[in-house]
Length: 499
Image (cartoon, rainbow, N blue to C red; front, side):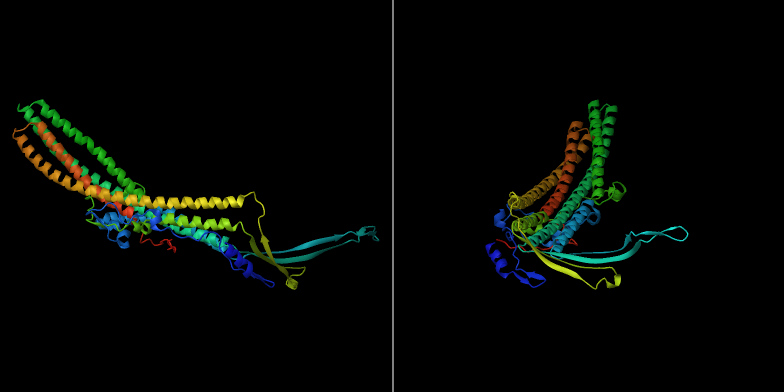
């Protein structure tokens, strides 16, 4: 800063009658993006298995990751959500606000010019004596007249960015604009992940409803057999009552599944910017749970700093807070402004510009005593920058945690799906055998009931495991920052320099 003051002192010079050329220097620290090591970013992820790989993930895969689920209905819903979701619309409005704030900051570098003009008539009356005419009337001898007056004036003022207050303000506004762009991207990725989640949950509810209704048919058949055996004296009423209770329990599960399906469809409608009901009528037709991809590339942890929009937003917020240190520091130093005016006044419009007057002035101002207010603002802004760095680091660590958790969840879902597939196959075989033996009178109804309940649980568990796998994939792609790379208005790439 001392060197900067010397430049101002020795390179400043007056240009006769009009301008001042100053070698401006920006107060405050120049921003340097923290290195990954300073943020605690490890070299590799701790979770590694066959479901994920450390190969670099392409932006194209991240941008439209849901297309790998091969579900056209889901892809269409996501397109509608991107276009119409109201959270996204709000974030787009905030981005436009930030863009206008940058324009306002840039306008401060230019002179401010204003002008005025006026015109009018002035009335003048002068009292005089009186006399009496030959008829005896009193006649006034005073004088009165009207005169015109016109004036035009213009004034201009220009704040010289002597110590970089304006340039640091513009730097902060640019960072704020970029942060708003990344906030929009973060809203978009969140909406896409939530839409996929509710879509998969709706398909899971439809699958569980299908299982429940198939089970109802079987249990109704079992109840009819138990009732027939009771009437024939081949079984006690215990079998008949157990069959009746089992059927009622399955019947009771159906309304709950229907409510779950309706709730998911309603949420899908709202996420696409529409009212619940007619908007998702086509989705009420049952369809399979989307198929999951086999392997997902996750890259390395350092990729998180460029892939996650919330991380990039936090980094830009740190850049803005650092720039505002310079704004606060520049206010401690003298301010320099240049102002000027032009004007003309005439009693006749045609002579309005015959005589023009004006002047140019320079103004230097320095706060001498303010009770420590400006110094306190500087310390406050430094504290804000420290908090912004902590928030940035926290966002980075949380992002890494999200990726690790998503990889663990995906590995767990795939392991459980494999085991539930085996359990379903075995319990289905057992149920076929038990049903045949019950009809032949070789086993009691309790054994059949236990076997079929096991089959029902296995079918539902397998369906849940399949949906959990897809949801874990959505969670992982969201954690990796997928879904915004092909935005029409991507945030500007800010130049950063690692320490």
